[in-house]
Image 1 (cartoon, helix red, strand yellow):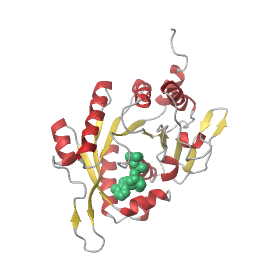
Image 2 (tube, rainbow, N blue to C red):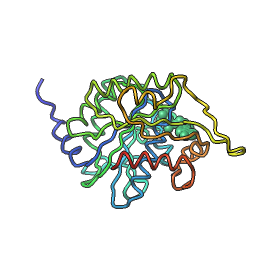
Image 3 (cartoon, rainbow, N blue to C red):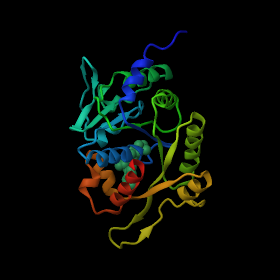
Length: 270
Ligand code: ADP
């Protein structure tokens, strides 16, 4: 088998992007796509920065929904596939844009998935000056992760942010992600504990809804020598904002969740 003719093209596409960050989680539903969307909005609030999201969650792409882009389609041009732009400096590419309807979850086998990821990396035209590419991956450590990692590693990847919730089952799964990153040589930027505590809007009392008997993400971070980048509380308005594709940080600038998100984002981008 000779050298892969696509590799030089992928390399040069990826080399043009300053920072590449993967967002990982061990389980579905822990808030990975929500985190990716808030991260993208916060980064692109600086209009000197060009930001992109590449959603490689092939079996359940939720990025079009949380970014308010359901029903959009991707255009082809001479220079490749154009991402869908939320605003001038924020582009999104998702398998969701290629499906006939959003409920149409794809059940593809490994090689076809890998082919699509390769095509995303090779053919999407992110422009010449992209600062941040956020790669939203499916939960777990599947084929998609491996092919993504192999291609991204070649052209330099900043690292991965691991999202978890405080429950023991979620923490156990995040250990597998930590292992995966270590085995594949992806630096871990840190852990984020999402849905961490709830402040009752009526009595203002704080409850640990998903308290883990083992001390949650902080204990795991300590044990693994990783940084806990922050804890984002449960806030029903986050769910509402993402259902409607709204920018939560802008809608609720004073909420504790916004403070937590911005603090985490600061740590990732410094
Ligand atoms: P994943 O990408 O990990 O599968 P999502 O980002 O789709 O998870 O989030 C799952 C659900 O939880 C969504 O309905 C989302 O709006 C909601 N959600 C995420 N984070 C929070 C939070 N901190 N507070 C309340 N709801 C949240």
